[in-house]
Image (cartoon, rainbow, N blue to C red; front, side, top):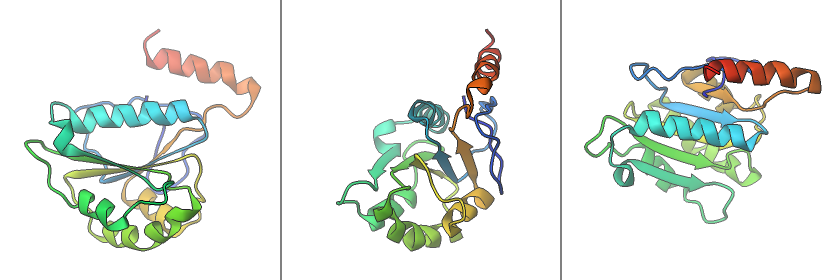
Length: 171
């Protein structure tokens, strides 16, 4: 289900591609963005399976929500810098990066983390929408991946989008 992505630029809206090769290395930071919540959740679920396959999930997954007033930026960075336990990789999921209150974290501690991200951590950022002109979004696109979860834009595109999804699933 991982939607069409590419580093350093905007992916085509609503397209999908299969990239579930177990040997394919995962980017250290991934932005899952788009208005379709179902597609975002499916992309996150697939990433979780790829990152944590066979791992002790309780020790190798941390979740944060920047939409809450009580998020701790230092705890997020500490989780991203933590080594995995009896696993190759760990997952740190940060939701709500499109929220106004997330700006201080994204323009501060997060940008510093991007200077030297940990290879054993897959830091996944999730948002309904982000301003792609922001410095942190450009850095994520250059360093990692941006997964577009927009879906079809026009009614005329729905049929083509469904056909592409069905052929991807082998139906």
